[in-house]
Amino acid sequence: MQKTILITGATDGIGLETAKRLVGDGHHVLLHGRNSAKLDAVREQLASLPGAGPVETLVADLSHLDEVDALADAVLERHQSLDVLINNAGVLKTEKPMTRDGLDIRFMVNTIAPYHLTRRLLPLIGTAGRVVNLSSAAQAPVNIDALKGQVNLDAMSAYAQSKLAIAMWSISLASEADAPVVIAVNPGSLLASKMVKDGFGVAGKDIGIGAEILCRASLDDAFADKSGQYFDNDSGRFTAPQADALNPAKVAETVQAIEAVLSRL
Image 1 (cartoon, rainbow, N blue to C red):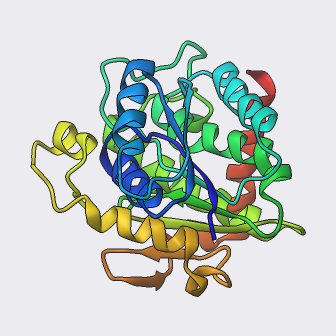
Image 2: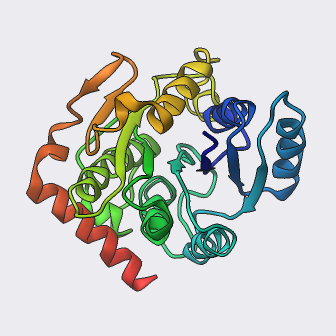
């Protein structure tokens, strides 16, 4: 059965490889990216695949909340339902680590923007849909002041904290009544993405490792009853995230901080 699937950060890396597989299997895929020219090129590439399903493109810079809202508005206007949202877009190293709103871009793009986008799209996703959130093996306790933009962190610290934070809000959302299936996934360590090449200076492992698990998390029946859980693709199983994600008080504090940031943007 054809599914309608939105993938953020779909113009390269794991997002692009995942999109190739899903489009090739006939699914209706909504591609998000920051660059319209790159999106157009990817759309043409995917549309030429044998058995390709429909492909749409959506442009937004997720470091800006108004563009996150515009992205959500566009999806809400075009579609009556959304089967899967894959929050794949992420940032590690960048020349501009702070957003125009004074937030660390890692927290904004990796944690806050996907939280807000997911909330906006919940009416389309419903209880039958899925949200797949990209976490990481790199997870560190969240400095709430840093999440709020009041403390500066180095790139790796901010990244690791943002990736724990997205796992934390995944658990929180999954616990709500009428929530969709929400799964946080470490797609695999040091895969051959631009982020890994720029951040660590290594070529990385087969990007298909990450794409394969994102497709499974999005569509396989084996994941349908795993809402609120964390899948570690390095070990190939569901496992516990960093301990703070299992602490209800710390999870609540992190979600409240995200909401506080959104309320002032």
